[in-house]
Length: 140
Image 1 (tube, rainbow, N blue to C red):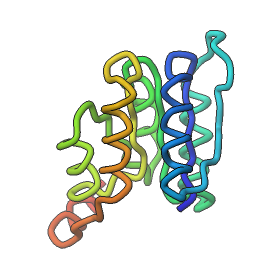
Image 2 (cartoon, helix red, strand yellow):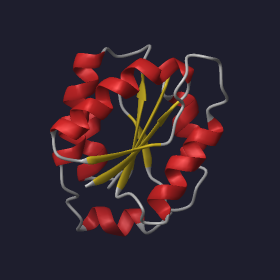
Image 3 (spheres, helix red, strand yellow):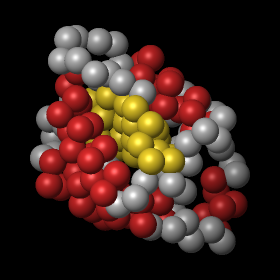
Image 4 (cartoon, one colour):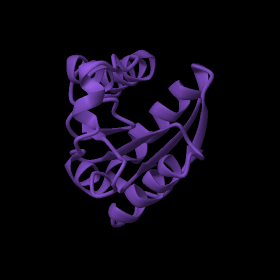
């Protein structure tokens, strides 16, 4: 699966770890920046990842900033994006199973790389349950 990934300066290290994991799992990772520890504005990176997902160039996206809050707020401005800010395994799984999240947002200053990697594994392997959940998604 082709995965778009982006971050701001606060998520640079975690982006590298998540990208390596995704590649190990056999996914194609498409880097949407940033690639420097210099301070940047996160909305542009969220836009780039969301546009790749919406255009079908990537199946899903992952966005990382210090808390994940800014990225999730920026991503959810795009119609058709269902970005989920997750900090533990249960919400990562449920964001896919019940909400068919197509973008995962992570906070590099909130969770460590070990937990982030497990969350990405869960998020990438959990299928959407559809049924009553599809009806709810169609409401927004």
